Amino acid sequence: MEQTWRWFGPDDPVPLSHVRQAGATGIVTALHHIYDGRAWTVEDVSERRGMIEAAGLRWSVCESIPVATSIKLRTGPYRQYVDAWKDSLAALGRAGIPTVCYNFMPVVDWTRTDLMYAMPHTGRALRFDMLEFVGYDVFVLKRPGAEGDYPQALLDRAREVLTRKTDSEIAQIETNIIAGLPGGEDSYTRDGIARRIAEFDGVTPADMRTNLMEFLREVVPVAEEVGVKLGIHPDDPPFSLFGLPRIVSTAEDAAAILAAVDRPANGLTFCAGSYGSRPDNDVPAMAERFASRINFVHLRNVAKDPDGSFTESDHLGGDVDMVKLIGILLREERRRAAAGETAPVPMRPDHGHLMGFDGERRSNPGYSYIGRLRGLAELRGVMTTLEAVG
Image (cartoon, rainbow, N blue to C red; front, side, top):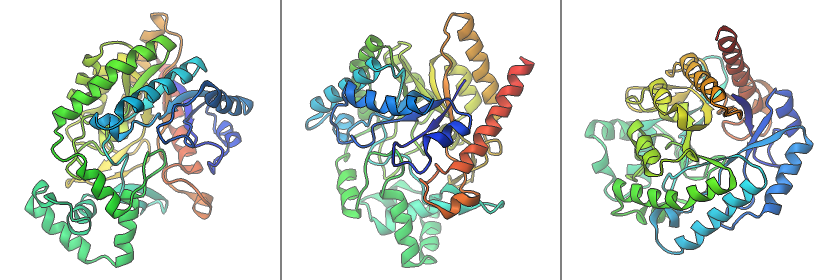
């Protein structure tokens, strides 16, 4: 697998020179300064590619071209946004960017309630606390009908947790949930997110699936034409938030997406941490089942709690059997090589703990340098060992 690194552009606290020092050869990035639905041009893409190549690296994956809410609902000016998305995809392909990751999550992108969760080793991790989320949804945001989405026992515990928190702690939870995390499309105020959630009133999972399939039928042919492989990222976390339909959460969701447009260009971003946050997902089994359609890999691990909470663990230390998973991916890579497919599948260490000197300087949540450096080194060690033993 090609070892890559997420980079958020010239303003990223981790410069490209440090990425190269980490041993990665590929960059995963996007034109984050053009995230308003406008089409990216070949010139836009080539400028960013030139910056990356000048540092001795390769732009391996675009993560992500944002998918506007209008596309997800197929309302308003969705036709304009779909056409712009296709134009951006074509620009990437013509500039030689081979892989595009995207997601179809409604309203909120990847979501955590705690960005500074204390770990036993004294580093800091990202955490999704179900009780804090439910408390926010029901008792702070006061979303209409929210109480009906949760068991009474969970509501009672969430209320109890919330009553023990100060106003500033509640405000921090709200900021973590709605202000937007790195790579996400939108940042909201409380009123703003309430309005956006209301736009999805009456939209069922079946409706969302239909809208995704219609989108895929338009964009996959463009991807094929310009030589790009697509990889849809799973929901993170892989279950409904705010009562919204999330449709990229399970093995059957993935199977339906791949069957809708059964072409190699229509594939998966296989995020071990996202799929692994759901107890009924067998992550290695999913990798085995969908191996031939995995176009990009996020190697991240989680430790789950019985109530649905989870903490981002050490890369080799969570509930996902990372060694087994990497073995499956390497076998698939050997199969592709035997079939004449020479391009390795890009992988990246997804997220990392806030550790050492990184705690004293600016960093993006989940994307500090030292934690990801440790994760990449651990993953590289597993890959090297498994490759050596065959």
